[in-house]
Length: 248
Image (cartoon, rainbow, N blue to C red; front, side, top):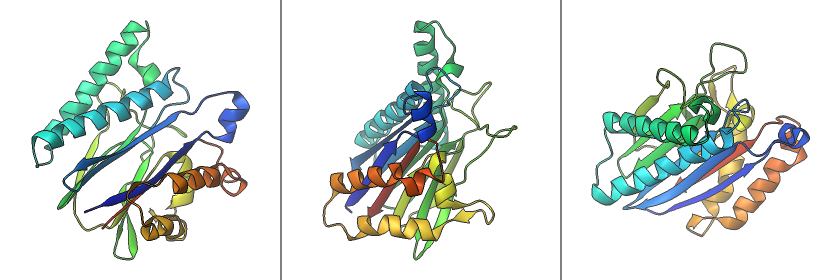
């Protein structure tokens, strides 16, 4: 199985106006033997080191999955994955202590997927999302979760423990899309609680028809230009991260 993907992360217009930096982070890694891993993390705007927390989250899980696949062909158990999140939280706590602050200042969401030939596993905390294409239809694999109050959500650093969802999916999908909440209003129909096909189909089509493998750099640059363009920014002023993956 070969994989190809397009990815981009752009700063939102509201952050540009406020002089804030990009709070989103992401990573995509081919793990060998037909496996691929992808993750999106959105640092909390209210957290001083939210962007760093998002980067730490993506970096930690990318390394863990790469190391795991080198040792065994089987995916980690739910208990293994939960323990990795605990390790991540300990790491963030250590980084926070060195900066004389608290883990909450590194608050970030998490939406990750690892795909092997016969299974896909998603890990999810917060309001980012993952969808998969099954046949001609798009299914929401991880729906965004909001917190108790308006415009709030859940984070890796939440106490006493994060609201972690681990879901195992049969290997029935030919494409996957991951995105931060800045893309959520474009890719999801919140009224119908469903993926928005009229957005997803045109976005994935160039990736489906591409002849290359791995990271498609030129298409990724075009995606960045699109996400930064007026047609998108008129609808959302938040940071926007989008990963489009196809395999065959």
